[in-house]
Image (cartoon, rainbow, N blue to C red; front, side):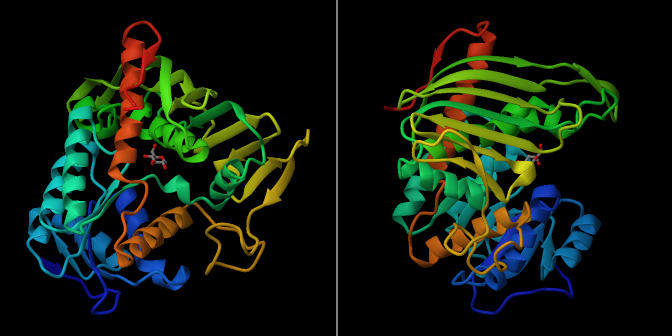
Length: 385
Ligand code: SOE
C-alpha cells in the first residue's frame, strides 16, 4: 500500500476502493470525488484506495484522481476494515472473481457492465449477490445510461402511458474507434478477456435500455454478428481478433413490441452515438446520446416531435446540479449512478440495476450469439417468464 498527498473525503464516510484506473476507473473516480458536492442527500465517501497492477501508473492516476492510497493487488483491499465499497472497473474476465470475493468479504460492490463474460460467471455472481443481500451486503451493475436525465424522463413518460402502447423500438449504438483497420489489437478484441466485442460493450447498454425504458423482457431474437477486420497488429505481430466488430438483431419483447438493434465499433465518423427511438400507439420518443440533454417528445396522441431541453426543476437527476439550461455531460451519468448507489446503501436497500438485471441482459446477449451462430434463426431468451 502506498499513500498519495491528494486524498479527499471525510473520516466516518464509507471507504471506497476502485479496482482499475483506466477509462472506467477514471470515470468512476470522478464520480466518487464529486458525488457529495453535486447530488443533495448523497452521503460523502472516503476515496481510500485505487488499485492497479502497475505501481507507477496507478500512483500517478491516484494522485490525479484524488485517492489516498494505492495498491497493486486487489486482494489486499478485501482484508481492510476501512473499505466498505469495492468498485470493479477491470476487464470483463475479472468481474466475477473480484465481485464474488468482495461480496463474500462483506463489501458492497458496483461492477461495470457487462456483468460478466459468460452466463456461468453471471449466474454465479447473482447467486453470491443474493446470499450477500441476506447479510445486508449490496451490489449493482453499472449501466450508467439509466442516469441520463432525458432517458429517465423518457422512462417516466412510458410508465405514465404518454405514448400509449409501445409498438416499435429502434436502438443503435455506433462508434468508430475500430473503423481504421490499422487500429491496434487491444484486450477488448480478445474473447478470453472481453467475452465479446460490440455485443458486450455496446449491445449490453442497448438491451439494458430496452428493459429499463419499457419495463419488459426481451423474449426472442434473430441476430447476426460480424467481424470486419479479423486480424490486427499487437505486441507479437498480427493477432487474431476473436470477438465481433458489430452486431444486429431483431427482437420481440414480453409486451409485444418489436425492437431493431444495431451496434458497431466500425461506423466511420460516429464517436459515441447511442440512438433510441420508441414508437407507440399515442406518440413517440427520440434520444441521441451525442445531444444528451435533449429528448424529442411526441406525447398524448400528437403527431410531431417537439425538442425538450431536459434541465428543468422536477426533471429527473437534476437536483443539485446547475440552474435550468446549464447542461450536463457524459460524466454526470456516473455521478448520478454513485449517488443512487450510496442513497440505496444508506437506506439498507438493494440499488438498481441489480446483478439480476445484469444477468437478464447477459441472457439476451447469449441468445444473440446463439442465433448468429445458427445463421440468424429465431432464438428464445430464457427469461424465466
Ligand atoms: C467503449 O466502447 C466504451 O467506453 C464502452 O465500454 C462504454 O460502456 C460506453 O459508455 C462508451 O464506450
